[in-house]
Amino acid sequence: MYVTISGQKTAGNFPQSVSGYVDYLEKENEGVAKEEIAYFFNQYGEEINKEEIIKEIDKNTSKLKKTEPKFYAITINPSKRELNHLKNPKEDLKHYTKVVMESYIKCFNREIDGRKLTVNDIKYYAKLEHRRYYSGMDKEIIGNQKYANEILKLRNEVRKMTIGLSQNSTIDSKENVKKMNERIAILEKKAPYQLEGKRIVQGMPKPGNQSHIHIIVSRKDAANKVSLSPGSKYKASKVKINGKEVKRGFDRNQFYKATEKTFDKLFKYNRNYVESYKARKLLQHKPTKYFLKVLKLPENERALALKLLKEHHVPITTIPTNKVQLAIKVLKQVKKGIDVGVRSSSIGY
Figure (cartoon, rainbow, N blue to C red):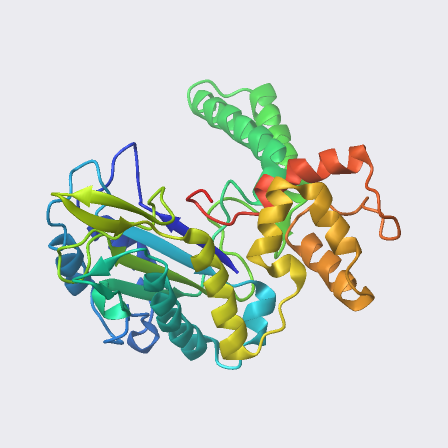
């Protein structure tokens, strides 16, 4: 389970309206049948239209500065193994989202009029999506990059020569264009990462079950009075405002752990050690200790752990499975793959 939280800062600024992000999330509804349209939902509605979301989020920004985010975007990304475990993915994930948001509000160190916060105190809208697209961060795109660069260079040359041919056609020029096109065809097939016979490029849809959840949550509480920021640098503290002591902070570690515990409890999921947020955090900060723990797992759990790591592109092919100590060379290789293979959050720990 990978969870990200972002203030949606683009080009150095926070958007003053949620409309652009809502339109982005509506992309999957383009050209689909009415019965296949994916609507926004929350605790109180199942078919919420984008006009309502834009209106409710944009007006709920009292006293927020232009330099502050008006809303936060939370993305919940179940793994392939987690998705395959679900009996009714669509309904299960929607129910899961609602329970997760109940956990989300509990991670704030805030009170309203002396009482604890509940899910009724936040304004949020969620959307379940089923497609993902290859980006520049995917290993397939990175692995194909040198081929993509050469293909682009050759295509530019072909374009220039083709323009020249229309004005001054020669046999040699035509032959050069033919050779370059043949070279392009060879490179397209030679690229290591292919999908259905085609080189994988950015923007291409990923295969398999890619279901994930997007959540838009207002920075201000539902009453438009209290600021609730999951991007707060404080986990739990107190500050005096107008002479009154006010609690503040958001425990992100607690929230990330809650997303996993909620999933495991709702769907009776047996989480492997390497699938846990605690383990991923250890991998990022103390890889030696992490792999020692993996190698000490019971045989069946260790075999599954190594399989899952390989699927998540963490370089493990040279890690010894029968030794306690890891070679320095291996650790260097592991560290290089951590940033690409493991992404826990867009907001720091």
